[in-house]
Length: 228
Length: 228
DNA sequence: AATCACAATATTGTATACAATTTAGATCAT
DNA sequence: ATGATCTAAATTGTATACAATATTGTGATT
Image (tube, rainbow over all chains, first blue to last red; front, side, top):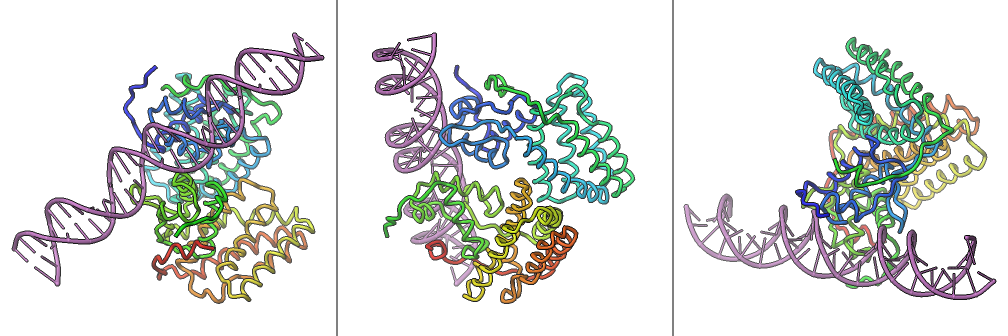
């Protein structure tokens, strides 16, 4: 099975592709990411794959076990709580900053995210919807013009995606779209207090909607998940 | 000039060694980190060096310019402000958490850090003193038992070290030891409010003690800085 | 002397080869 | 059958070779 795909990019490209697959839950926590396998899928040498895996490991999206290989991370319950505690330190204040410097264009951009999210839900692409719902939060950090904090939030949202894959119960009713709509309303009014408060309770809602007892399971096929 | 040193470790070891050199200001912002050069210093192949450099780049301690190589990062003024804004979101609340779960042993550990810092100052090892002063903050995050947040703070403190190298004026009077002593006092009393407030003002003091107009300069010799 | 063009050199980017380690499978004894 | 032990296969860790790109140095031209 020869892969004739044009060599489309370096380590960054591969890392982003895998990260997207994780976001969309095509790659499941615990799944093994073999180097040769990835190397075939993306048509680059193991050197590139390794660089990509190292980068993903640094963001804690995968776990690198020495001499054993790379596995999609399986955040523990404690880690899940930590991630949401970190988010609750960073995101509410960032939402406030964003609200204060929000422009018309920014609001349109956020509204587009929500619309795309709804479209995805309607089409039954729940993985994509989840991904877009994360992008909404990242977009807020970008608008706040805090690159450092935005980078942290980006990582935390990626990890949240893993946490949701493991501990979310009612995937049908996902997506807090109400909370996001309420946030946009606060942004429209450039109401920093309101934005901060809404984000705070939104994060609490998210955490409490997890079932931290049970735990979804089990790796499956890799090629299938990455072929898109 | 043959290096007969025992191969003492993999990418992690190299990354930590370079990070320490940056912390202690033996490596100066802007300095070029050539792969062959590092490869000789640490007696490993460029493969390992590259992995280490990629890791450091991810923490923004070095900048990786494509086809040009690795350079010790030179945070801009805007980035310096961002870093301290991120710290001010994370560290005060973390200091509060730490205060609330502080044990006798933790306090001794922090006291030891301060003592070591003073010793370093007395011996004129200002680089090492600065490093230890950073460790004090990291230790607090560890005591708060928040690994995720601790990792962020660790990165921010590393970057602060670069910022200090670039923008600090009065290096003689460094080290806020008063602020650290005051924090320990709050910890002794398990006074969360006080700890949070002290940390907050400590960070403001740090930022305002920088001179964000002028900027120290210029790379120097590499082998010298790393030989230790 | 200054500037440009071009060759020579050095450095980084990627792939591959080989070594070390783990995993899987087969064989054998109980 | 079950389990242990050893062998073969597969996978990861590291070093090196080669290709691509930048940097430096030289000389010609003005």
